[in-house]
Amino acid sequence: MQIQENYAQWCKQACEDKDIAAELAAVKNQPEEITDRFYRDLAFGTGGLRGVIGAGTNRMNIYTVRRATRGLALWLTKQKKNPSAAISYDSRIKSRLFAEEAARTFAACGVTAYLYPQLMPTPALSFAVRSLHCSAGVMVTASHNPAKYNGYKAYGPDGCQITTKAAEEITACIESVGYFDALPENSGAKVETVPANVAEDFYQAVLAQRLEKEVPAQLKIVYTPLNGTGLVPVTTVLKRAGYTDITVVPAQEKPDGNFPTCPFPNPEIPEALAEGIKLCRQCNAELLLATDPDCDRMGIAVHVGDDYKLLSGNEVGALLLDYVCRRRIARGTLPKNPVAVKTIVTTELAAKIAAHYGVELRNVLTGFKFIGEQIGFLEKDGQVSRYIFGFEESYGYLSGSHVRDKDAVNACLLLCDMAADYKAQGKSLYDAVEALYQQYGYYKNGLDSFAFEGESGFHIMQDLMTYLRNNPLTELCGHKVTLVKDYLHTPGKPVQFPSLPSSDVLQYVMDDDTCLTVRPSGTEPKVKLYCAAVGKTEEAADAACAEYRKAVSAIINDFGKGRN
Image 1 (tube, one colour):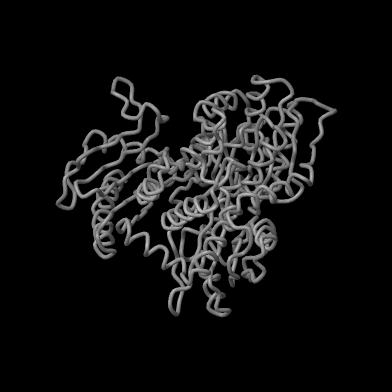
Image 2 (image 1 turned 90 degrees about the vertical axis):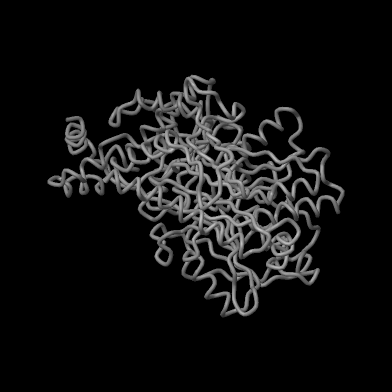
C-alpha cells in the first residue's frame, strides 16, 4: 500500500529534523495516525500550502517546504531568466526554519533569494516583492490558524497571491519533484538579505495613504499583536502619525508561536480579544486594535457605555469605505470614476454606500488575492489611481495600491484616523455604525464553520457540495429561494459567472433579500456558511439571520452525520 511505502521511506530518509524522526517513531503502531499523515500530499493552491506541523506528506515540515519551493523555482525558471524571490515569515513554530529552508532551496535552484532578517508581516512581503522587482514571493505563515498549523503563501511578481492558473502549473512542477531529491549543486548560491530600506519604505508607503494631515483628536489606544508580527510595524506607524497613547497587551506583546493566552489567534474570534478588553477596562481606553500573527487582519473593539463592543469585519469595512469616500471628497482627492472592491460574501451595505458616493463597486470571489487582482487590472490600464478601497468580511482591508494583499498596518492607521475624526465631531465609532444602519437599513451577517477532519472529512465536503447541486434548495424558513448562484464552472453546463474564475461556491438569494453562501474553505478542513440578512430594525435582521443559519446548519450537520 502506498501509504505504508511512504511511511517506510520517511522513516529511513527524514533524518534532518529530529522532531519528525521522533514523531514517525511514535506512530509506528498507530495505522490511523500514519494514514492521516500520508494519505495525500498537502495540497498546493492559490493560497500556497497550509497544514498541521509534523511528519508526513500531509503535514508542514522542511521536506514539504523544500519540495514546494523546488517546484516553484522550476516554474519560475521556465518563465524568465534570472528569477528572484522575496521571503518573509511570522512568529509561528518553525517559521524561521521554513523560511530559511525556502531561501536556501531557491538559491540552490538558481533563483536569487531575498530573506527578511527579522519576522515581518504579510503586507511587508507583498511590498518587498514589488520593491525588489522579484519574480515571486513566499510568506511563511498559517495566518490566524491555531498554533499547531503553519503555511506557505506564494506570491506573483505583482505582489499578489498567485492565480488559479499559476497554482495549477506550479502544482505540476511540484509533483515532478520527490520529497528527498537532492538539491542541485550550486556552490556559488547564497541567500541575500532584504535591504533595510525596504522595511522603511513600507512604513512610508503606509503613511502616504493617510487622509488626515494631522491627528484630528488624541485617542487612548490598547493594541495587541496576538504574539505575532505586528508589534513593531503597527506601533511604529501609529507613533509617527502622532498617536502616542498606545498600551500594548503585555501577555501578547512578544512573538510566540505557542500563543499561550490565545489558542485561536484570530481577531474575528471574541476570545482572542479578551486580554485586550480586560486591559481596556483597566486603563479606560477608547479603542482596542488587534492584528493576527502575520498582521494582515485587524479586529477592533470600541468603548460603548460602561463596556466594550466588538465590531464585525463587515461593520468596520463599511465604516472605512464611508470614511474614505467622505474624506477624499472633502480633500478633493476622490478620483474620477472611483472603484471599490469587495468579495461576494461581504456585506451588501457596501453597495449602498458606494452608490451614495457614486463609486463603482466590484464583487470578486472570496480571497483578498482577487481584490489585489482588480488593482492589477486597473494598473495595467493606467488607472490604478481609481482604486480607493477594498475589503472582505474576514477582517481584511486595504486603502492603497502599495501592496496587493490585505494590510493590517494600513488598516490600523486608517481606523485610528477615522476614530479620531469622529471623536473631533463628538461621535464614537459605535455612533457612526448606527448612523449607517439608520440611513441604509440594518445589515447583519453571520458565519458558521463545520469541521471535517482527515481523509473521510475531505470526501464528505466534496459530497456535500455535490448533494446541494443535485438537490437545490427551493424554500427555507417560510421564504422562497428566488435565485441560486453557482460559481463552479462544470463541463457541459452553462457558466453563470464567466468573468470570475471557477470556484466551489453556492449562493442562495431569498425572497426577503437574505443571501446564504456555502463553500468549502480553501485553507482549512471546513465548510463555511455565510448568512447576510437585512431588516428595518436590528432585532428583525438578527432574528432572520439566526433562523436561516439554524436551518442551513441542520442540513449540513445532518449530511455529515449520515456519512460518518
